[in-house]
Length: 552
Image 1 (cartoon, rainbow, N blue to C red):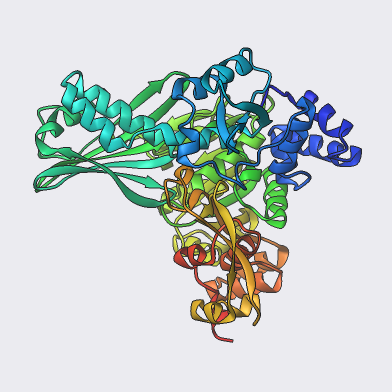
Image 2 (image 1 turned 180 degrees about the horizontal axis):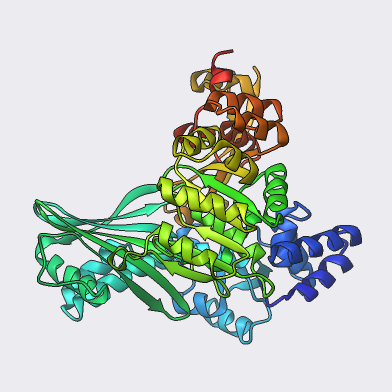
């Protein structure tokens, strides 16, 4: 998008009657409350679509709008423009009509654009159209060679092999929002795999004789021992590329085929953290924000490893962060770095555990405390006492669902009357992959297909229009790009407090929460399937219907 600040965008949309004055006032209030841009606020509240925003900007420039998501340029179309020209002027061939070309750009006012396009296409009539920046960037992926080809070229050149190999691997990790990078020694080569949106994908193979240089480079950058080959080692490193930086946590373990490396990508997307982008329903978002405004008590986020618990808590912290509050965290590891928040790293070598760190934090005059994870009885007890003495405490907890949290905390030795008076809210979540916006299209699912998936109870007995990805270069031919949370939320009401005092089972907690209107994770996921955010098969991959529905 051209450089429209919030004020310019507000003027543009109001003058074009794309948003009502009342809607704009509400969007601006939402933007300020959630600390997101005006555009993000408008999208989150459904006041305008990305396509309609694109049309508004095109109208401002008095040019057509190129909806790249609806009509994707082919690879041949994109490659008609030399890469250096395309990236300098942010242009792509949108429509080739023989004698005329429609060229899409996200910056129609850039200097020298028409002159350069006339030089590239001297015999063509050129029509300039506007397209969204993210859609233009997705088209640029057609210029990029595969990671395997680029690394093979580095090996052939024999120059600074290890640094250049890692630069290419890390650059692709940033491009595709990779969460983990695996270097896995095999008998004859080393497989490199990326975990993208929760799923591992093989992206490249290295000759085994070349692996040692890459391994040593990672050890040096992570400050690990190069002469140690038979013990596990942990460290961290940082990769800078222009204005982009990623922090990586290094884990090396010896296997029978050699030393395996796993790099966890940390905190690379912290700038975009916002509660509105996590996938919470309006009802759950409102409850979470209401409880975050309370002066004390506990908010727990639960789910398996890799379910986005820390991301949710940090989005919440970001919304609460300000000069008038003292926020302190203790984590293992510190995954996101947030300006204005005091963050403490657990260090077993100096005996700085969650429990001991939490005791010290309480003496630091905090308003809000984040404990990375409640792992043991001692930490649970201190956390409850901290919440009881006037602090708002956020933490993660390992449990399969929200209802299981209460019995498990009671089993850890927390007194029922203490838990009842301190626990405010439990949020359980999983992550499902989002359908790629760039190649999303509608599909018709028959009642027979619904029956085979066991989902006919949610969709009835007629044909249903849903969505799926068509697989494109932007989503690395998976049909999915990014992830979104499916959630269930239990708010501790007076009735729930009374139940906690009776030392309930998870089934009793579940039954009361359902009576009070709780929606299960699977039901939340069904709503996201119906709205076109994910697919039914993806939902079934990570969640299953609640037992009470299965038994109907």
